[in-house]
Length: 80
Image (cartoon, rainbow, N blue to C red; front, side, top):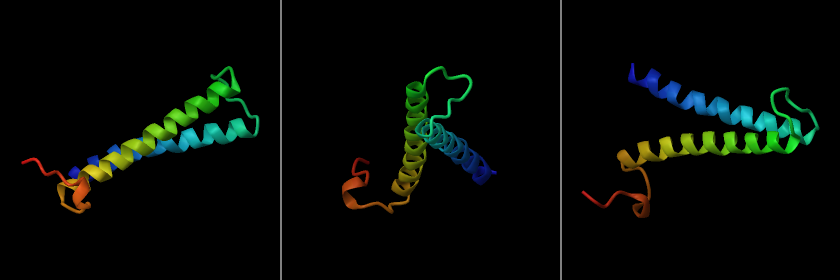
């Protein structure tokens, strides 16, 4: 059950990051999505979604690897 929850925690930000890429790509080709009034706002929203989703997934993986001592010594938790 824990693995399914962990998968869902990773899939939702992954979809948000994918949607952010789609918004930025549509802005590049001049396609305006209906709820967003400006192209520059669409690109900014897409960039925020992409960076947020990617950062969440990367932080989740980094936290997991740090718990299992699979990171370099400079990233390991020396406080105990």
